[in-house]
Length: 541
View 1 (cartoon, rainbow, N blue to C red):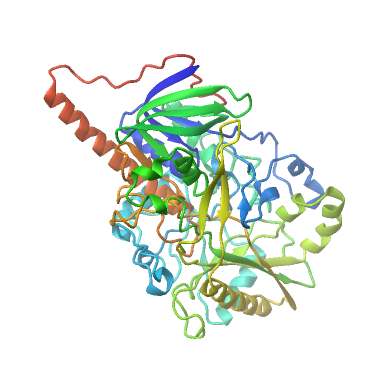
View 2 (cartoon, rainbow, N blue to C red):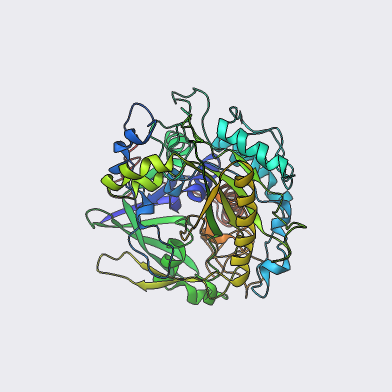
C-alpha cells in the first residue's frame, strides 16, 4: 500500500486549501495536498461568443447539473482541481467590518460569534487579493470596509448594459459600485487576458483568464514544491491520544488505497465534505462541542431577478457581472419588514449556463429568448440555525463517506430575500424592462458553517485559530469555519481566514520545535522522506 510522509497534509484544493498551502510553503514546510477530483480539460483556443458557439460546453462537467440544494442524500457531486473556484463568477468582495459583530436579528439564539474582528483579518484580505490578482475600483460601496493596499489590477470599462443599469439605480437614489473581480485583464506569466465573453458565471474559463485556484494559484505552488495528488479521496482520519496520526485515502478512479502521515492535517474540503469526513472518522466524540459538527449550515437566501427587455440589452455579448448595490446591506429606511440587516444586490450576466443544463435541442430553441434577459442577483444573509445541518449518510463499500443535508430557510431569511427582490425589480423597471421574472436559487454554491470557530469551547467546534478542539494537530480552513454567512460571496473571506489559520499553524509548529530542541541535544529533522510511490505534482497542466 502506498504510504507518504509530509510536514503538512491539506485535504482539498479550493480557496481555503490552496491559500493555506501557500503560506505554509513560504514558511518552509513540505506540503502535500489531496484532491478527489482531477484537472479539467479546458483546451480551446478562444472563448465562446454566443449561443451558436456553445457546443464546447456540453461535454464539460458542470456541478449545476446536480445543483439542487434540497434536503436528502448528496450525490457524488462534481469535483475537480481548484474546487468550486473554477465555476465562480470571480466576484471577490470582503465581508463588511460589522459582519464580524453579527447583528442580533441574524444570530438570534444560535450563539454564533466571530473570535476576531475585521481589523485582524484585514492584512490577510490584502494578501489574498494580491495572490488572486483581484481587479478592483478606486472606491467601493457604501459599506465597503477600509483596505490596507490597492488592488493589483484595474477594472476595464463598464459594458453597455451595465451603464444602463447604473444610470437606472442612480435615478432611484442608489449608489451602485464596481464589483472587485478575480479576472486577469492583462497578458503576463504567459497567461492570456480576459476576452470579456459572456460565459464566465457558473462555467470554467476556457482561455484561463479567470483567476480561479487551478489557473492562478496552484501552478505557482507546484513550482514552489507543493505535492499535489489529484484523484485522491480522503476516507478517514485516524486519531490516537489527541492527534491525527494518519489519513486513509483511495484513488478516486481505481479504488487503490493509500495512507498519509503528517505532523499537521488541514481539512479544506468544503462545508459539506469536511464535517462528513469528521463524522465518518468518529472525531466528534473528542470535541467538547462535538454535537455541533455539521450543524449551522448556511448558504444565503438567493434569487435571480431578470428583466425581460423588448430589444436585446446585451448586444455586445460581454461578461457583465460588474455592479453591486449595498445600500440595503444593513437595512434601509424604505424596508420595514424585516427590520435590520438584509444583504447585497449584484448584477447578473445573461444566464447562458442555463443552456448547458438543458438538452441541446431545447437549449438552441431557448437561446434567442435568453438574449432578451439581463438581471440582478439578490443575496440575503441567512440565519445560523441549529437544525440546518450535514449528517453522515453512511460509508459505502468504496470507503467514501456520504452526506445527507437537512436545511430550511427561516421566515426572516425569506422576508429579507423578498425585500431585496422588490428593490431589484424597481431597478430593472427603471432600466426599461417591462416584465420581471424571479427564480429562487436552491444551490449550495455559498455553503458555509458546519464547523464554526469561536471562543466558547461548548459553542464552537474550532478555536479562534481554526484548530479542531480535542485534536492537537487538526485544523480546518474552508467555508465551514464561518459562524455567520455575511451578505457577500464568501470566497475571499475563506481565502483570508485560511491564510490566518496557516500563520497560526506555522507559529504553533515553531513553538513545538523550540520545545523539542530544548529537551534533546539532537537537531530535529522534519519528516520529509516519502516511503513508497510518490505521485508528486501529477497532472500539472
